[in-house]
Length: 65
Image (cartoon, rainbow, N blue to C red; front, side, top):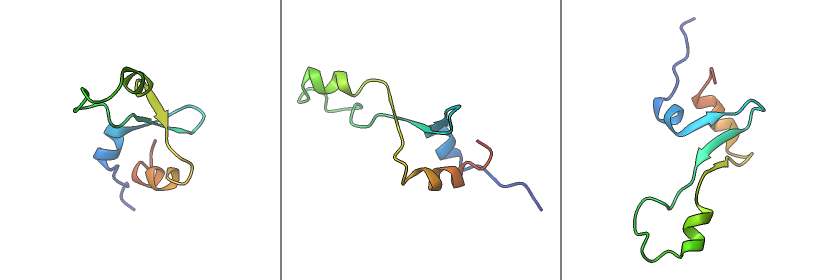
């Protein structure tokens, strides 16, 4: 049986934490920032966790993570 391949786009977007939860980057912070308030931009900093309902499909894309 050959090895399963990792979807490279998923491996670049997501990291699996030690607890098994999946970390993702925040959206809506790339462009058109002038019309967003300072509070909104501040709250978009850092990373967030993936929802539990989306986690199985991401684990399927990264079988060895």
